Length: 299
Image 1: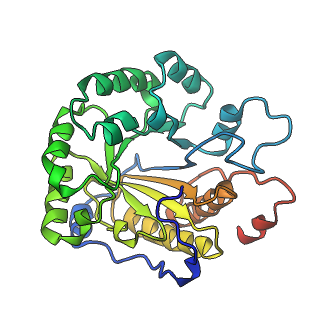
Image 2: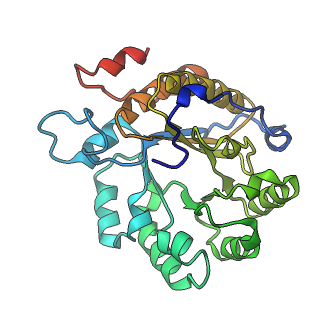
C-alpha cells in the first residue's frame, strides 16, 4: 500500500497517541463480553503479494490462507463487484469461523464520491450478503480529495446504508482531523449511525491515528514501512488492544499491509502471538516457510 509511504521511516515518531477522551467514555462501564472476537489478516491472498507464504504445491490459495488466518480484508471488491456466485465459492472455501471484510467499490467512493450510487450500492450489497454468517464488517475508504465540504454526501450515504450490515469508514483528507469541530462532528455522525471509525497507521500520515472509537469495535489498517520498527509498532498495538479488551471492547479487527509486500504474513504472525498473550486469545500463528530470514524477528 503506497498511501503514507516515506523514504526514511527511521525518522518517523511511531509512538501511538493516547486514546481520545471519547474512546475512554465509550468503553467506560462496558462489561467483559463473552462474545469478544479478534479478526487478524492480510489484505490479499494471492501468491504474488504474499511471497514465501504458500507451501510448494499449494493448489488453492484461499483455502490454504483460511487455515492460517481467520479473516481477510477483501480489497478485490474495491476494483470490481464480485458476482454472488463468486462470493458463494469463496465462502465455501473457508472454515466455519472465517470472516470476509469487503471494501466498498471504488465506483461508489472514488468515481462517484457517494453521489447517485443507489444502483451500484444495491448491486454490491446483493453480492456480499451471500457471505452470510462469514460477512464481517464492510469498510468505506474515501480518497484524499473527499473533504469535509462533502460532509452532507457522507451523511446521506450513511443513512442509505443498510443497518443490518456493519460498516467502517476511513477518511484521508487532512481537514477531517485538523479542525476539532469538524472531527467532532464526524465522530458524532459515525456514532449516531453505529459506524466504526477506521484507524490507519501509516508512516506518512500520523494524523490518521486518531485513536477515537465510535463503536465498541475497532478496525485498524496497519501499514508496515519495511523497517525493523514495524515489529516494535506491532508490540505497541498489542499492548493498546489488550487495554481496550480489558476496558470492554467487543471486537478487534486488525489488518496488515506493507508499503512493499514482502512479509505481511510475518507481521501478522507477530501480532497474533502478542494478542494471544495480551488478550488470552487463541489465534492461529501463521506458518512461516523455512529459510525466511525475517522470521528471526518474530519472537
